[in-house]
Length: 170
Image (tube, rainbow, N blue to C red; front, side):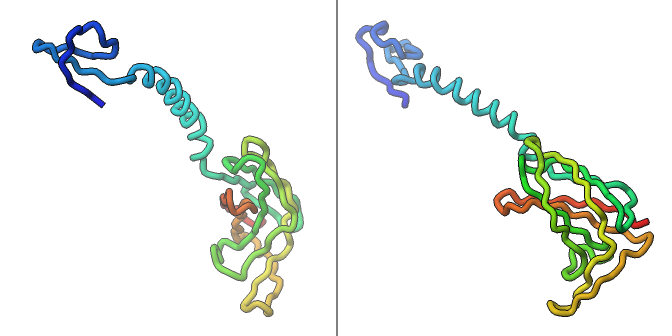
């Protein structure tokens, strides 16, 4: 708050910022001590936001091998997920991407490391499920040359994150 008043002794006020020719001084009460206390706090806040911003803004990413064979081992690498998050894998034919009733979810769960990264090894199932209704599901074999979406998602809804990669069935 800026206050203006006539001063009898211009040197009496330590916080004044200027004295006009008519003898009027303007000053801010206690502005300098508050500014000196606030500056390190603002700098620390800005530094913490700058350091944490790349981690928080990193989009989750999953990479898988180009070709997978049903019944054989497959591998995936994760990056950009929340730290120590539990994740699951869902496999779905790319032709039915985002459709309901097609695909298979693996029962096993994995956990990312403290940096949100991880390596996953799993056995590619020989079949997936195709459901036309809740009680009418049939097992289908993966077709050679078709593509499969490997969806990796976190299990905690508070830190929801998903990523998708595509592999080809050989």
